[in-house]
Each structure stands twice: as C-alpha cells, then as structure tokens.
Amino acid sequence: MIEFLGVSKWYGDVKVLDNCTLRVGQGEVVVVCGPSGSGKSTLIKCANGLEPFQQGSVSFNGISVGAKSTNLPQLRAQIGMVFQHFELFPHLSVLENLTLAQRKVLQRSESEASEKAKKLLGRVGLLEHSKKFPAQLSGGQQQRVAIARALSMDPRAMLFDEPTSALDPEMVHEVLDVMVNLASEGMTMIVVTHEMGFAKRVSNRVVFMDQGSIIEDRPTSQFFDSPSSTRAVEFLSRILRD
Amino acid sequence: MYDFDIDVIERSFAYLFRDGMSFSLQLTGLAMIGGLLFGTTLALLRLSNVRVLRLIAGGYVNLMRSLPLVLVIFWFYFLVPYVGAWLTGSGQPLKVGAFASALITFTLFEAAYYCEIIRAGIQSVPSGQVSAAHALGLTYAQTMSLVVLPQALRNMAPVLLTQTIILFQDTSLVYVISSTDFLGAASKVANRDHRLVEMYTFAALVYFLICFTGSLYVRRLQARLLVIR
Image 1 (tube, helix red, strand yellow):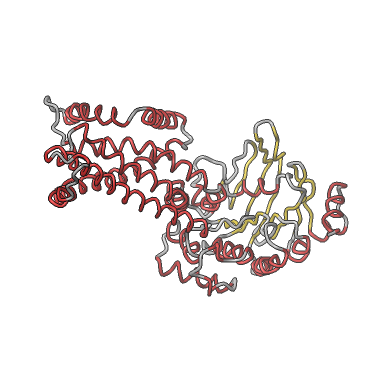
Image 2 (tube, rainbow over the protein chains, first blue to last red):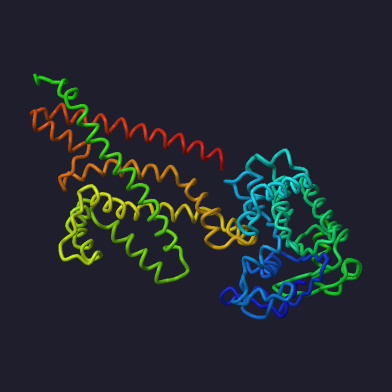
C-alpha cells in the first residue's frame, strides 16, 4: 500500500535519508523507532509529500508521491497524519477543525461534515468539547482531536509522527488507547514513536533507523527478542531502562 | 489677554464634521481596506517561491517606504490623470477627482506598510500549521486563506490598527492637493473668521480624542490576544 524504494534525501550536504526501502501493506501497523535525528519523521513525511526527496520513489496505492503529474492535495486527503505538536488550528473551534477539510477538500455539505465530526468526537470521548477552542483543551485532549480530525477525511492509512512525545506522562495513555483501537479496526498505520509498550502490543513490524538508514525491519517479537544489530540493542537498552 | 471665541466652533460644527470629518473617515476607511487587500497580496508575493515576484514586491515596498508621503501624494495627483488616459486610450488627461487621487495614493502607500506587518504575521504562524493543512489535502491557496492568514491577521491586529491610526492622522496631508478633510475644514474656518487659535486647538483636541481612544482599544486588544494564545 505504501512503498518507499531507495529513498535518499539531502539537506545541502547532509544526507538525512540514505537509500531507505520500506513496504507497508494494507492493514499493517509498522512502528518506526530510533535515536533522535535518525530520520524517522523525515521518512514518514515523504509518504504524503510533506518532505521532498532527491532519490528513489515513494508510492501510495501505486500512485507516485514525487511525480509532478500527481495531484498532491488529493493524495494527501487519503492519508491521515498526526503531528507531535498536534497542530490543531487555534482560530477554529474543535468542531470546525474537523469539518474544514471535509468541506473544502471532500466537498461535503456542512451538515454531513459536522455529523461525521460529532461521531468521531464521540468516539475519542470529546463530544462535549466540540464548541471549545484548542487552547482550552489539555494536550491529550488536543491530540485526540487531532486524530479525530485526520479520521474525518476517511483516510486509507494513517501516519503518526511521535504522537505522544509532547504530552505529559499521565496523558500518554488516553492517546495510545485511541491508536490501539484504530489498529484493531484494521487501519494501516505507520507510527514513529518511542512507546515500546505500544509497539509490542499492536505493531506487526518494527523498523529501526539510525543516521538516515533503515537498520532493521523485522516482525515485532523478533525485534524485541533478538535484535540483530548492536545499534538496536544499545537503543533498546537505553529506552527500556526508564 | 487673548479673547477666545468658542462660538466659532459651534457655528462651523456642521461643516467641520459633515464635510471635513466624513472626508477624513471615508478616506481612512477605504484606504485601509484597499491597503490591506493590496498589502496582503504584496506580502504573499514577498514570501513566494518565485524569485522574480519576490524582487518586484520587495522593490515596490522598499521604494514606497523610502519616499515622503507628501511627495507621493503630489506625484500621484499629477501622474494619475496621465496614467488613466494611457489606460483608457484617451488623448486627454483623465479627470480624476482629488478624493479618488488621494484614495489611490493612500492605498498604494499604506499597502507597503501593511505588507511588512502582514509578512511578519505570516511568519509568526508556525510551519507545523502549514504542514497540518497540507496533510489534510488543502491546497496552497486554501492553506493561506483558511489557516495562515486568519491567524496572521489576528496576531497582527493591534499593529495593523496602530498603522491605521497613523493613516488617519496622515490623511490631513491632503491639504497639499486642496482637498478639504477635517483639518482642512478647520483651517478654512480659521482663516475666514480669523480664529486660528480656537480652530487649531479644537482640531488638535478632536484628533487627540479619536487617536487616543483608538490606541487605548489597541492596548485592550493586545491584552485579549495574549490570553487567547
């Protein structure tokens, strides 16, 4: 469904992605982990064209992301994305955050869009906050709204870019619960995260990156039981200690 | 001791406000709207990926901000009829009223200042907002008009209003093309009735009241925006 083939990217002289190849099939949940600066976020942002790349190819359902002929806005509408810092629109109410793109991109009517939005807000347990503005919500609540906003577009896959790393510890669970739920419904997901508990529980595969390269790409249990690279072993021992 | 004649204000009240002040306010309001629209366009051009557009908009803004306003008012007053004639293909210089000429001048001049404020406003919106809008499938135009500009204008509302208060004061410069704004009206009455001190004091008081009220409002707005963010 999502396919990265030999993707390389440079910022000036610095190579931030080095020949990355990754295939994610329909319904798969793939966790991408690695030390900070290893290129995890950059890689998943190539999947919906938020980050341009210089070499290789990325395709979504057979449509090339980098090609000039591709209608990028239309492609992006099919791929939901959740950001580290939520990125809700602060000038819009929670409900409007969910209806904006539905109306403008999918051309849904006002009532259709808000019905869909309310259903999703109910699902993430925030229906009673629909009239509030993002700044009036806690971090965990904002991130749940952000997930609902992405889902309002009926995406065929979801990208999560460190969705819990900007949250206070007590709010991590409410967000992870929503994601676990989503995975159990068969959503295709690529999740950049350091939440190894989440990875163990729901992911099919774990991808370990370091210095822009994919070092390991293995089924979850194998990755945790017997990581094959010393760098992954070091990373795991550091991250699982706390 | 100078013999104050307060009565002159009462006698000329209708003329001062119905003719003079309404001219000043109309010119300020319309030039603000036009300046904001053109200024926003300039700001988007200055932030464009296309180098030529950046250079043209940047050159325009720098030129306008380097010229005295009085000079620009004169310049356009004499130039606009010829440009108009050239645009309409007429052999005669186009007859442009003083108000229209002043409005065009102030719009073009203020746009340069509004542009810089709006540009700073756009840059104050975190880039993650643009990413989020793009990720939802919004186009560049939709991202700008629905996500970035509303936040940019809201963040910059106090500065934009302050600039508009300055614009209101600057409209008094239309006296150089013999238009009658509030100050112009006061000045005419002052000369006609030989009541210079009364009229200029009264005019100063009116300008002070309007502008000071405006800046008080700006301060309250700033405080409110801090709470929202």
